[in-house]
Image (tube, rainbow, N blue to C red; front, side, top):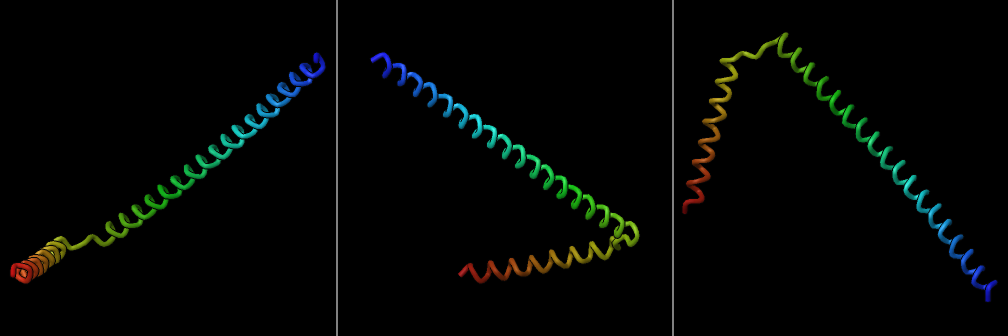
Length: 97
């Protein structure tokens, strides 16, 4: 009887140790994966930011070397507004009946 109780104790202790080791491994793997994911996301964000800034600089340089004609831009916007008003009026008249 004493021998079987002692044997059960050692089985319980060994089970707890194995479970603890596996849990520690799982936590370590999870934290490692989380750190890797965080590093990848930071790199993606850095690359995105660099791309945005490069495009911004490119557009600023293009604009500064060849500034858009303000009057032409205003005329284009007015024409676009007039076109949209006409389409909206046409749409409203078609759907009114």
